Image 1 (cartoon, helix red, strand yellow):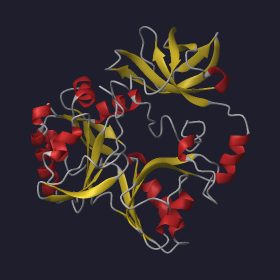
Image 2 (cartoon, rainbow, N blue to C red; image 1 turned 30 degrees about the vertical axis):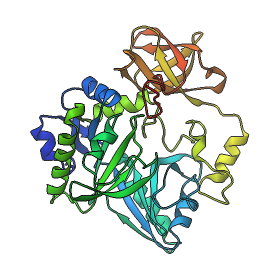
Image 3 (cartoon, rainbow, N blue to C red; image 1 turned 45 degrees about the vertical axis):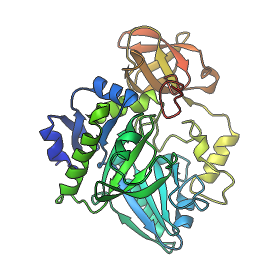
Length: 376
């Protein structure tokens, strides 16, 4: 039996094309992947991401536990501050990439991938016994939306009685949106500016508050041509932004150093799971590294396609799609560091053909025109 989010009836009512993802029957698209993708790049889109995993870690040792489990510094975090980090196994492989927010001195809120809901919570819970903490899986109690795009801020500002423009990237605060108290955080999985909206105490059997908030946000964004968006656009957007998808681009056999997530690793910390393995890995020559791939002409790279240089296989594609913004195929994959220089031309074997591609810097788009750092 596939699981559902609290907004399952809404998706059906809106005529969404449904499909399976991470054990959920979820909206893949409403109007279509391309119009929903471009709505987020140019205006604003609304996603139901309640399928993701969420837990709280409370207690006097909460920061110490997360410092031990995560590669990034947790103890110095301020209240309402968030971090993107990774959680590694003892071999330095990535158990998951996640976001953690400090809600108060002794309470943290951890958000992780839907495909790893059970695995991540079990991992955290199994280590919690050595610390004075309480862990709680709240995945089925908290509705979670993403409002993404350059018009995300004005859309949500219409619903808030306080100025939310001061919320910095990877920070959050509790606010009231149209008489509903929610946790609002500013980050996202699209490359754009935007927010996550967390509505607590909304189990599957009591969807009314979640449905009300969803409809309220859509109404507020009408003047900006807001669109409800499915998981299809979420995937193409994250790929254009050069963000990893767990299970494709990263897994327990991939280290953050190979995945170019070294910024999430603080080797100055006294200890964390996987530190010794990562230190050893750091001192050795990496055998592979994640790169961005842009097709020079036709063709769409897909997961598993082989990458060639001068007739020799050097790697594989881990994610690929047609970029609605660039109007060409793009992808990510792993190649040896000596072949990873920007501008290197490679061939991707698509069925029986070898089609030309170029290794490029990520994000794939012009960051002065698109994304949260846009200038225009």
